[in-house]
Image (tube, one colour):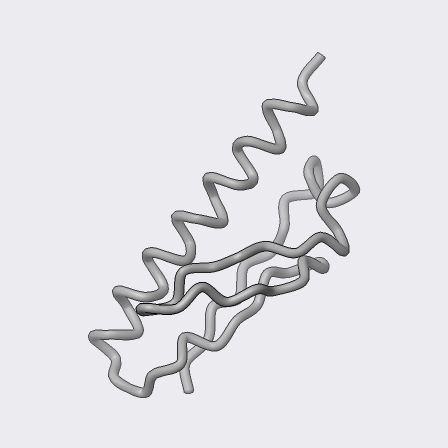
Length: 74
């Protein structure tokens, strides 16, 4: 299986470590716990499908980090 693995930016890490994040993986929404990385199985072996799933999940992660970073700003 192919995986998503993305390092959490240091400026948001203290705020999000240990929280749950729901990731869109194909037709499902998969909860994952945030650590130093966000990691999840893409639940496919097909490279084309994995690329699409990776893009969708990564976009969700980046939107989440952006929202958290805005809340950290003074």
